[in-house]
Length: 113
Image (cartoon, rainbow, N blue to C red; front, side, top):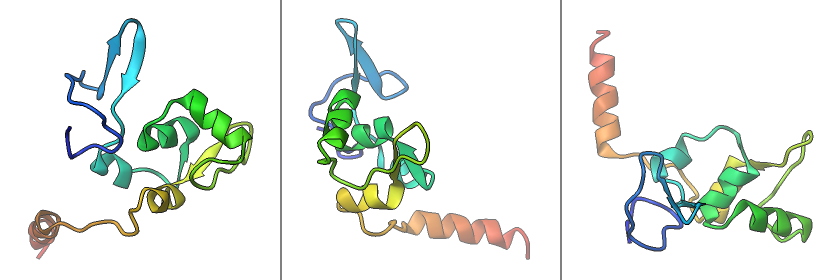
């Protein structure tokens, strides 16, 4: 099992996109932490389903049963999931700050002094 992905259930070779095909069906391996923290204010229901590790079909079923693990809104014809609600449902309350990010920021800002 790889640690850098959410909702990964097994170690398997992946294509560059993080997915691979088996018997004509697309298999998704979740969302990496950098992908999760780079998401916009809302994400599609498909993206939220990937983060939880289930299919889009299951996501729509849960929405219709009002049982999706976090808030789902429908501002237009498409369902959207607020990213902060998604992160909270995944148990991620805050965006982590890594020492390497701080060091990179310091190096970048030093260029302007």
